[in-house]
Image (cartoon, rainbow, N blue to C red; front, top):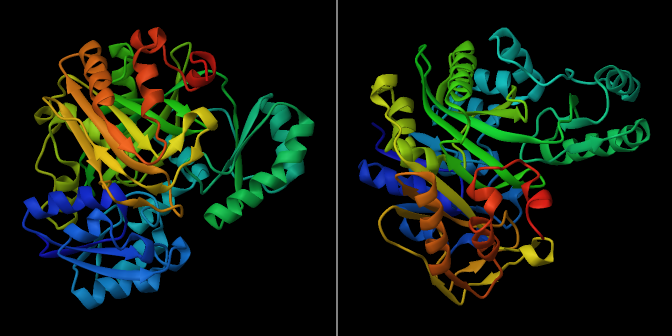
Length: 445
């Protein structure tokens, strides 16, 4: 096992990694930008290194500074968390070139799966269904021809993208002509790659994903599936495990996820995202080659520490588990606590936290770097924590989540907590009638 690792991230995921590392006797170094000097992760890590100012490209995305921090502190490996450089194959390759282990898949696997076009090709080879669509589009004329063949509405997507950025829905030829250059520019700004693909846009569907762990030597295991359908503008808000899919369909999706990951001899933690339409058909969307924000619900039903598994695999200890060892029990729900005002179109709400009190009790977990007196910086995403509950069944989990949300106190800024309380009371949600357009069609916003 490693003696010391560097965490190339911030916020709750940096703290999450620190906690598991400490339990394993692994020393931690956390990097931080100037506004994050008082972050809880900085305060609790064994060492910390400032890598730049507030701007991400000058700090958390500054590869020379991050690698230098690892080298000067003697870190043997780097855990990238999620976001930032977690899916950057060039960064993973530079780690390897400098004798530092990247805690994640190989650069080769990341390149294969990192683009949506590449992921579609791999899925097809693995016999996994994909949404009707295209590879990388060369120009607008090609896009117009493809849209005519696929049929409107279509969805333009950044091939290198994620998180809903660089996506445009086009319902007519005129919208496609307008949106094509805009989507390409967004893709270039967000991902330094203007390449676009096209897929048939499904109006109503569920977003279901499969959590996998691979050893890079042919073994790939799944830890069940999650339903992440409650979203806003392709950003997930609430996740739960397991989904409420029929068991036969669930098993088909789980098998497809494992089969696709085995196609590239996957190593480490990964998530395969699927669309499930209202007729029960499922299609592969993309694979996230990293730990995800919502990994906690899968940890709760499997009673496994995914960060520990990542460290064991990356350090060469391998994956000792077999699929039969993984027993999924109960139901878990996660609400992302975002510094946003849901009553004002989710306007960001940075500022000082005047009073923070998180809930407790049996089956309640809080992953957060927030504390009373901490100031939420305006430079990064709005996630300030995650509230996760686990209960024997879904109904009890919903009741437990509502109770935990009502106990949560975060004063000084606006948060999404009131919205989640309303969702827990929503009859459509209670009976599992959840699609990605839930907020528009099942809630009065």
